Length: 543
Image 1 (cartoon, rainbow, N blue to C red):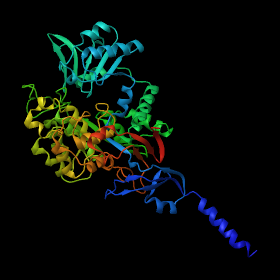
Image 2: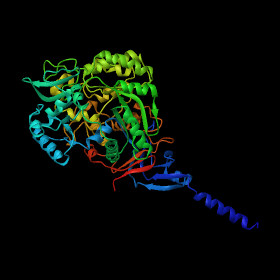
Image 3: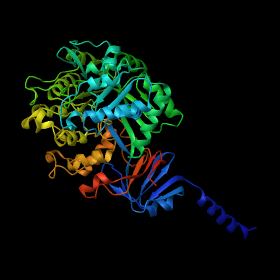
């Protein structure tokens, strides 16, 4: 019996060594942890959907026995990318509508609508993505051709930024729109006493409110199709800006079923029913859903001349744009949002809109704070107003590809002097020492690697301009990566659970085919995601 004891002890020890104490070991990687020291590692361990340990493969292999070993063979690994400003649900719905992105003329748009209508014979014809600034004739179109082709079927085609649209007469009739009609914070274009079909900002809503609500099946399809495409570009969290409260349950149920794995930070739209809902219910927080903020609209977009400027547009001498609501509205809702401890996130593009909201924020924030109220876009900021972001801890939430999309015509709208402090991401970063980045998709492409490229190179996908657009406001590669990981998480009050590869955080990570921290600038737009993981579970594989 005594002779058998050592053998039994050795057998027991061997069995113990074979027990799994981790779910996954990722090794032979260049792991950009994006921790406070921006350290790199070559391995990490995942257990229970979270990062268990980070370090060298040799030490981790000795300590942990993982069910799965992922040898990435020297590839670069990053925290899952976070889009700090997007329209996830709207993008998904757009995948079921007429895609007008990258069209180059009004006749091309007409052809696209006709093709779609032939295949989809019932209901409204909805399209998105046109931009008259991409056309040879850079003027808004009129509805005459739509009226002749679709005299009985309503049509609504939205501009790329969603702040302008063209409707045919059938749609205008349903909405009761009349020539000469006016609306606060919007424009109903009339020419020679007749409607052209062009609607700007609040005027668009007159028609969209008449469009039948999508079915639950259409909502699910929108969310899941958007998720599929976002996983393919490495997104693991998206900020969906401006949803109705009714979408919260739809998202929650789809996540509960396990179908919707995308993590979502939802901003509810600036509407009475949404305030009533969240004020009564309180903040909503699950591992996949965070609802604690409101999206408010101060003005429109620069491309449709709806951005509210301090001085007239350079290409429209008597026009300053407009606020979408009376300032009293913002002054009334800001203290209510503050009283309930929620975050206020305001779309403000023009320097007048930005100044209006900075002053209202300042009156409620009263100095340094941690409420993390945000100015979404912060696109054109008067030089004397930039310091207010730091003084009142106001977060500029920006989208770098807006700069490289707008640079062709922004100077015509603003003039040389005003353009200097437009898209000033580096100056804005310096105010608080951090800045969240996003895309504003579907206004821009969903790919966060284009965000990274635009932030650091300040060029379009063709490499223009050679020296970069206002390169003094480019971000470093470290800053850009932080902007789409840990800083985007911080803008959502989630920096303790995501945004870096550190023990205790969700195992959300992405693997690329090239290292964005070392690749040539010209290579950045061509880099692809090979794998995306959420909770340590693979949700995308390029194969």
